[in-house]
Image (cartoon, rainbow, N blue to C red; front, side, top):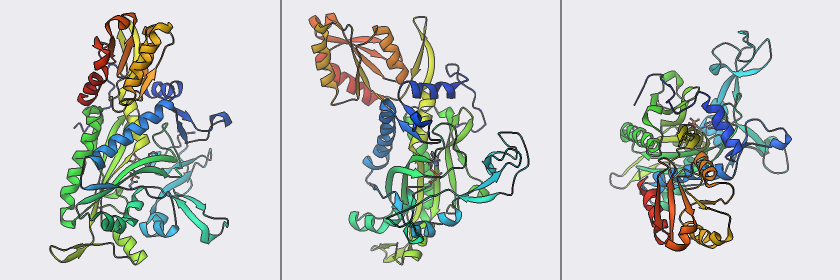
Length: 446
Ligand code: GAP
C-alpha cells in the first residue's frame, strides 16, 4: 500500500478528470443537479437512469460482502427520523459540530479546519472567532412546531444499530462477535458541501457495527481494516489509488479509541472513503445510561455479563460511487479513433449487456428481442438500434457496459451473435443458445 502523497495521474487519466467525469455524469444520465429546472438546490443530487443502477450495484456489492456472505452479520433498516433523546445520549447534540468562521472581508462562511487560515474566496486572513456549528438537521414531528415535537434527521445510520441492539440480540440469538449492518440515507448540514457528490447534505451510508468481547477489539479492528481495503480493490480500484491512514489522537471523534480511514486518490489529493473506528463501549453504555435498558450480553458459558465493544466500518455509498467512476474513467484509441471508456467492474456497471441489432431492418428485430429477453433475467440490459454500430459501441464504452451482443444478418442463418468485450474490443461469435451462459461465466470470473 503506498503511503506518500503521490496522486500522479496515470497516462490514460486526463488532468481534467474531475470536469470530465462530472460532465459525463450529466450528459449520460448518471447524476443530475437536484431541482435543476428551478436553478438547482445546492448540495443535493438526483441519480438518473444510469446512476441509480450504479449506486444500487455499489450498495448490493457491499451488502453481499458484509451480510449475505457471512453468518455473523445481520441487516437492519432503521428510521431516519428520531427523537432528541437518541442524539443527546450519542453525544451528537453536544459534539457533532464543525468550527464555523466568517471571512471579515467578503463575509463568506467556511469550515475553519478546511481552509488553512486563508479565505478561499477573497484571500483574506481575517476571520471571526470560530463557533461550534451543529451539523444535524432539525425538524418537527406532528402538527405542533414546539419544543416537544423536535425531531432530527439522522446524521449517521450507526445509532439505529445501537438502539436496536437488544431487539436484534433477542430475535436472532446472535452472540458476540456479531454485527448489524445498514445502508441508508443520512443528512448533515455541511457548512461547505463540495466536490460534486463527495460532500453533500443528503447522502447514503453503508455502515456496520460489529460487537465483540472487549479484549478482542484490537484484533477485530485490524481484521476489518484489511477486509474493507480488499473490498475496494476487489471491485477494481487499483491498489496505488488507495491507502489506509491512521488518525492522530487529536483527530479522533468523541466516541473513538482509534480510527483509520480508507483513502482514495481523488483529483484534489488523498481523501476519505470510509472510516473504520474502534468505538469501544461508548454508544451502548451511553444509551443504557440514558434509556435505563441493560444493553449488555450475558455469556451463559462463563456466567458473565458485559457490554460489548464495537468495531465500525463506516462507508459512504454515494462518495464511493464517485470514487469508482473516477477510477474507471479512461481515454484510449481504438483503430486510430479516440474513445472514452469507463472501465467499471462488471458488477458495478449500469448495464452489463447491450443488445444491438446491426440494422434497424425489421427482419433482425424478432431475434434481437428474443436475445434481449433471454438475458434480462440475468443482467441489466440496454437495447439500442440507433446510429452506426461503431457509434453504438462507443456509447456503451462511455457508460461502462462490459459486453455488447450484436445481432446481424448472419445470425438469422447461423443462430449465433457477436459478443464484444469493452476493454479489449475483442469480438467472438457465440451461439444464441449459449450467450447467457457465456456472459454469466465472464461475469462470475470478473
Ligand atoms: N458512524 C460513523 C460515521 O458516520 P463518518 O466518517 O462521519 O463516520 C462515514 O462517515 C462515511 O460516510 C464517510 O467516510 C463518507 O464516505 C460518508 N460521508 C460522511 N459525510 C458525508 C457527506 N457529507 N457527503 C457524502 N458522504 C459522506
